[in-house]
Image (tube, rainbow, N blue to C red):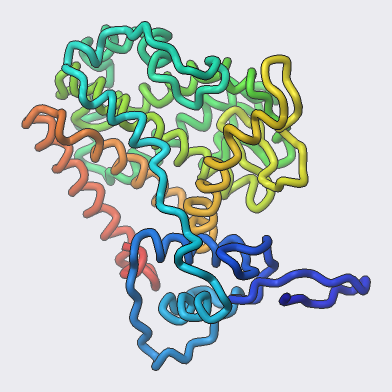
Length: 372
């Protein structure tokens, strides 16, 4: 077992691949969370890498960019086993598959079906979206986005507009969830809706109560997108329902990277739960659910999101601009097979505009070509 000596005479486990602090055995080898996530992605996506330096690169966690070919070979050399990687499970797509097979009328019709789990246990209940907010009526109405704003937007950077909308979301979350004085709430914090020192352990009941507000924030963000007001009502419903789960996971992952890494998973309401199996913050028993039940239901998804989204974000130095662009790309990618031809054309144009803006954003950055 790989170890290093600490100042107090104890030993600390280290990653056998890159030398960082180990988080345990992954795929039959002792490694850190980053190397485990890298190996999992490489295997599940069947990626092939080629070394440019004769397969003799040094793999060390202190390096900014490690050779992926040599890193993978070292993972294998240290005993990681490909067959130990479980097939990818689509926690999100499976839920939406049933929705996408329904007719247009069914998409906007409130459902009487209920989840086999209690409402508080469901991460994103379809019934909650349909019953709690009258989206079929709201989305049919003309968007209230100021036409002058849309006109101005064509003359400025699309990324700049997306960043402004993200700042608005953060300001609204401060007002909704923060217990700070009003003057502090009015001080825009950019990509930080909360400070680390005011995060508090979360409760499942509290997150459930805030679900409606979070859905409304996503809806307001969508309404501010260029060309959204030109879409038919049914297409708005499809795009909304397709993007909500993805956006929730992406937003929480980004907040975790900013405020919680490497120990806490951060929620949009300023609360958190511990990622470590040895810490109890945010997992305490509640009247309608025990700690054991909460961990069984939610820890696998949080851990997978942490390994496959948060860790790579930290590793690459994921920026606020990239986050805003990715969020918009996810929205405009949604449900292409069930959208009208006109909406598909608008979505493609918007994706191309965002990618073009990202290309310009990366142009002057040293690692821009690799990131793009």
